Length: 208
Ligand SMILES: [Ca+2]
Ligand SMILES: [Ca+2]
Image 1 (spheres, rainbow, N blue to C red):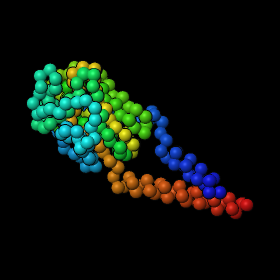
Image 2 (image 1 turned 90 degrees about the horizontal axis):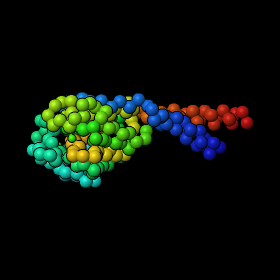
Image 3 (image 1 turned 90 degrees about the vertical axis):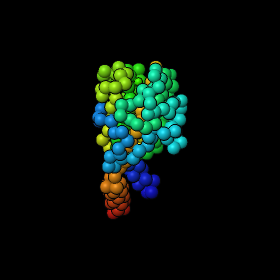
Image 4 (image 1 turned 180 degrees about the vertical axis):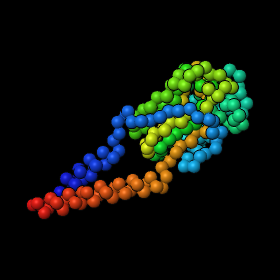
């Protein structure tokens, strides 16, 4: 009986969490945040050092000045930033349920990329997704806020930046974390599953 109910509970939970890989994830351009954290957001990496031990791989802390040919400062950014040089990658450990993730992207190139490890699977974001992807250091069409909106809470294990040539610059990685109301809904959901399981159980015993 216990195992039967457990199986039902697991099935119910998997229905709550299983989402097709094609679920609506929107990846859009917005303005640079310059580190201003919106309501419901938490700063994950402000470009300083190794972002509190979370950023691994091969990268360069630089800024606010541009290093010609190596690392282009994001326009208007007066702080330390990250540049990932050609052939290297930098990975930010996240390990959180998040509803959206965004960062300030500098000099976007067609040969640069970001990739996310999530409970929806790996999500690759090629620089070419956002034309002109020309690597221009100054214009807003290549220096922007890149937002990944999952449309729901998703487990994000890590984010990686890289590119085959110099350089992929980023700063101000911010995550939208589920608000207390969302957690309350989740708990209510668990409660409903428990109630259904109990009703099933009592129905079975009456029938027996
Ligand atoms: Ca910074
Ligand atoms: Ca670039």
